Length: 238
Image 1: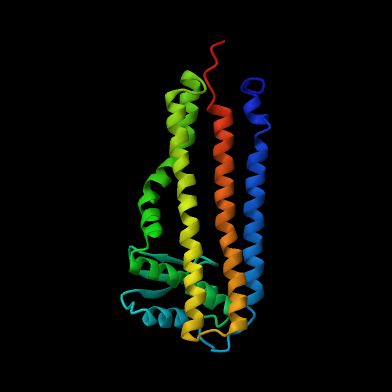
Image 2: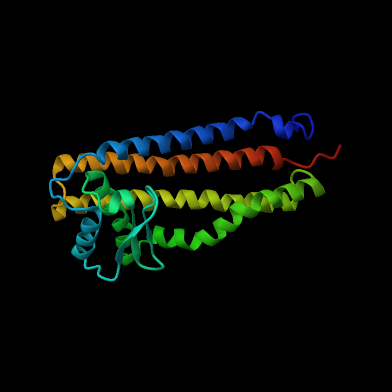
């Protein structure tokens, strides 16, 4: 049942779930990097930088209380609802490429979600604290419960529930990210920052970025499945 005792937990076949999850994440990361690098060489016809495009998009929606700031790192772009800031990385803030404008517009999409009270964004924000605690505390609690009472103990089940919060967070993240990208592409066309061909390039960049969230969800689900197989069974009374 337990793959030959404790040694089995280090050499059990469920490691394939971890390997698959890691491969999916690496493939998605490589895809977004290569796609961004490709279209970061394509200068937009408008000549606007990512920061300029972000400010124009926000203003077009009547959003004036969100600041656009530079942030260090590569592809570290994010919207912070706590400080009401669109934070753009070095490769986006001052770049005039269609890739940079697309990423900047995506982060503005999150600002628009926040401005309109988009429910999945609010739900994700509410889940964050519990998901962070769950992802960090789940494995220690599972191991403690296993060593004390064996598989299927109350502590093990609590640990699995806590880890499920991380899965829930990744699941809720998908509609938030896809919606932000959709808003970005539509608005870039409506405001006239990018032309039709440029928008097709931007869709490819944002589509590649979306794959990273899909891969993250898949990897987390696979990890949860592995934990359930290893530790979630009924107690061994032998």
